[in-house]
Image (cartoon, rainbow, N blue to C red; front, top):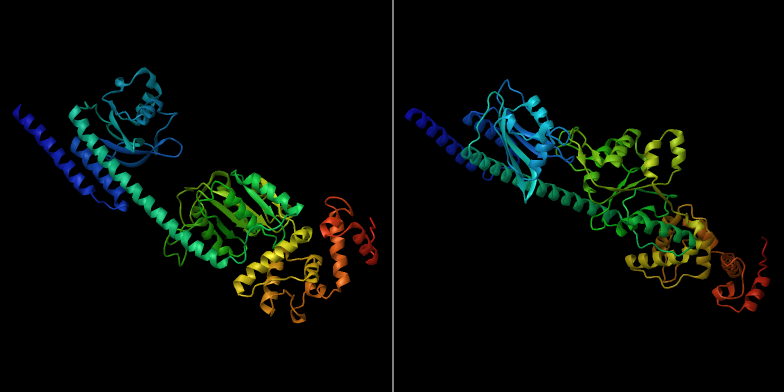
Amino acid sequence: MEDNQRKQLDDWLGIERLLAELATGFVGLPADQVDGAIGSAQRRIVETLGLDRSSLLQLNPDGEMELTHSWVRPGLQAYPAKILAGESAPWLLGKLLKGETIRMSRHDDLPPEAARDLEFLREYGPKSTVIFPLRIEGRVFGGLAFGTLTKEMNWTDTMVARLHLVAMLFTNTLARKRSEEEVRRLTEQLQQEKVYLQEEVQALHGHGEIVGSSSALRGVLTQMERVASTDATVLILGETGTGKELIANRIHELSRRSKRVMITVNCAALSPTLIEAELFGREKGAYTGALSRQAGRFELADGSTLFLDEVTELPLDLQAKLLRVLQDGQFERLGGTKALKVNVRFIAASNRDMAKAVAEGSFRSDLYYRLNAFPITVPPLRERTDDIPALAWAFAKQAGHTLGKPVERIPQNVMAALQLYPWPGNVRELRNLIERSIILGDSSTLRLPPSDAATEPQKAATLTCDDAERAHILKVLNRTRWRIRGKGGAAEILGLKPTTLEARMKKLALLRTG
């Protein structure tokens, strides 16, 4: 009897020494060593207590307890990857999620409502088990189980108390690991965003507020305001230079994601060999020269907006991967196998006829329909010439300030020329012309470039005063549908008496033909 008591005492002294060693060993343990240390601790505890298996489970996004750390005696059955799920072990999962410790010395200990759980235990063992909830800040994130598969075990209060200390030790260690990993992730993300913002600041040039009040632009602004507050995918269509990125930026600024920077990818500016790593990120060693892990634009845009400019330039194989991210928010880094999940709002843009691209087979139809949830077509500048004076003055003020050559006057014939030109390069072409004119000019009056930089607007600027006046009056007449008199009529807009306007129309041979 004394020998038995002495052996029992030696066993518990051994357990106490083991717990002390584990507690010391886990203090300050680096995050990348935690998983190995937990596995080693599970083995030592199982062997010391004469158990068969230890399993550490953690909640996955689907609400299932997934096996993350395990040790089982050689030759005995391990648990499946997903242990406790609502359909296989509802009673056990429910108890654990409520923060209750589960103690079962034999299958008969389970209540009648755990019949489905009993089937699960008979299939995977154990004969006896104790499961402790793992909690961080009051919320259960996992469980730690110990069990026997070859015999029944009487879980004494003393043994359960000691194993509960192990559960607390593992909880604190995993919580610290999660915190360190989150800090590292946020640090990397902030560093990436800092670099990205620096690149964007260098790349941005002349992007001011959206300028104009034409009916064509007002329609776009109304659509923009309606969709901004949602998370709907937006497809912005329009010719090159119409300001699609400016519209995308404004949608983001008006959205609930505006506290985070909008991430932009110009799909046409990246080579096919770089764009996959740019979008999805890469693991160290993914290809020659990949000396470190790099977060992609999808990761940077988590919780924010990702703007895919010229999306029709994406290769077909990447279109399929993009579709997956749009559908379920999941992707893998280049060279990686772990699925990453992000919460991203997508805005795409193209200057091409996307329906035609689908018909030609260069763009996936399923991706087109997914992106086309809320299309916005930005009108070309030739369809919103009423906005040209405001745009010209905005660009002149901005460029004049930047260049140190302020503009105080834009002659009438110059403005008329700008409004008569069809602008194949749209707003971007107008901005560039204004800047070039200021650089080449030598006074505070804006003059269009001389013939050595000849453009259609420059040629139009040589119009006579009568030609310029005729063009201006014709434009106002067309806007008022040739209504001369009354509030909002052409005479009021031009600041003339109706009779004076009619006299000038007669002099300029302005006759309505339609």
